[in-house]
Image (cartoon, rainbow, N blue to C red):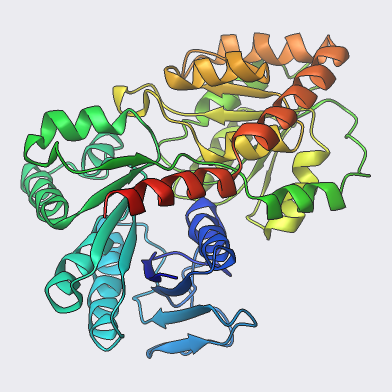
Length: 405
């Protein structure tokens, strides 16, 4: 049995992929027999206000039925995160409060940090001399490059600071977990001093718990009319203007679009859809996962768009795998490794990012071929269950981690 500290800024009852990812991994680790402590923020995402039942300005330890799991909450400056300074204050406040709390925790064998935000990585960097545990960085995004591409960082001084932060964190890391295998090339090229450090793949996947949730709701009927769904963060990276462009091209075809979620671009997109007179597009706020699954199961096709940028080449978003697990064909606006995955699974198509015309044509292709919707949906579900469950991938990564000891 290993004593493991997981530091993840987001954690349920917060919603979204970042919160779900390490809550499921933590549960899987306890099922392996490990003792797991999670250090996270007081829940406030996506509302920007602390959830009811939690203190606003102090630490809180949750009680769990699982005796091998403990969740410790640290204060954070909860805010709407609409400006650079609000986002920076949000991340830095958790970094400081979590670092202080972590000092008083017992010794661990492993400290696993989920990034982004990269500020969380500084917590383990600070802790390492005191705890002397192996430091594993779960790298889910390349920062600050991603923030620069999305326009979140425009100042050269801020970019230089971000790269200094990146170098500082990576210097103290012992092992990298990579959500995208292609990240290893970035690390080797930009940070050659760390090329010898172990890099273990821990790609996005779907948990058995999520598969059980799908099975429990399996008697739901698909919507009429033909429904296309996107769910998740409505941010700068998703490029959902492309979806509105496709909706405009398809406004006379009876195709309905559902966009579920919150984020920095939500209000602007609603305004744009209204100005375009798109009555075939509906926006729905973020919701708990069990309710979201119902919307996924009653859709025909699901979308995974991203903006066109080399930064997102080879991205494999977790939402795509969840759509596949739910038996839905996916239209993916990404190129790279995802194309091979779609070819192997026969679960959908990859199109050029930010191409409304190609997206509209792909949607019509599915609408006019109901058998294809059913066949590719079943194929994707089988592929996920066989090859891309979180239990299998985490067990593989942990085995590689222990071999490196």
